Length: 330
Ligand SMILES: C[S@@+](CC[C@H](N)C(=O)[O-])C[C@H]1O[C@@H](n2cnc3c(N)ncnc32)[C@H](O)[C@@H]1O
Image (tube, rainbow, N blue to C red):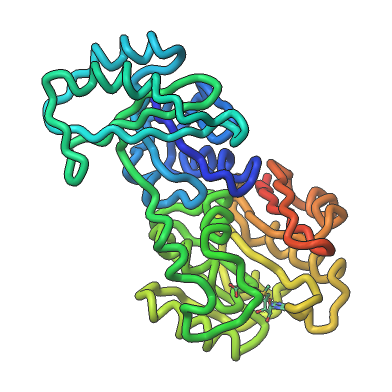
């Protein structure tokens, strides 16, 4: 199937990578057919419904019918073989200065789509997406991302609160980058309040959480139980995780940076080095690690232990960058 992803504009490169990593995590290959800005078209056998349940940094997934000029969309609309009521949703994903109120696409393509079909804006059998970028795209929506659900799991909506946790949508993206998958073992060795474990739990992974502080593990259990997510736990320094777990399929984690989240007075360089060594020991061959690091030099450090697949830099504020990294064990 040719899938059309409407990506969120929250980051330049993370949303695209999250989609592709999620397809791999679902056990499928892909070929990128078209891409521009927040639009990505991919050929894959992965289920759009399943992808829609796991991806965070996108809005909708559609089966792509046609793309190109308005005439090409008109051809696609003419050939569309669907039986039932429709609603047409228009999305303008061109850079803001280029957006206009011109509805040429909607009038011409919409005219063909609605010919002989019932329009039901409230409860249609099919939602048709008309997406405008530099090119135009026509698709039948197969999944929409439940973005408000990420908001509902934000730190301040959890019983055990700490400001150190990533926003749930970025925690989910990290879990997807780590290729966490249903029924496979997933570890967060700096689990803290459980923001990352929660997101891996919703994907159906078999969770293992650990932290050096008992208080964190207790609070994490409380947070997970509020959302009905189950995990096993052990208390351990990151360097000793190999004594507690066997091989794990994936790891996603957000280690302390030594600012608001404490490294227990350890120099961050020493902590990260011990962490990479421990991850290399427990991660299965070809298993992925998704990790957030505060400086580029720690990304280079990781390459001494694991194979670096990708890095995404995110500016948090003037003095804090985050590097979302994906490493693979060889
Ligand atoms: C940035 S927080 C993790 C945030 C977590 N993702 C969340 O959602 O709350 C880092 C965690 O690492 C733990 N930690 C610090 N040093 C550690 C070590 N040497 N081994 C294991 N855990 C450690 C801290 O107790 C803290 O809970």
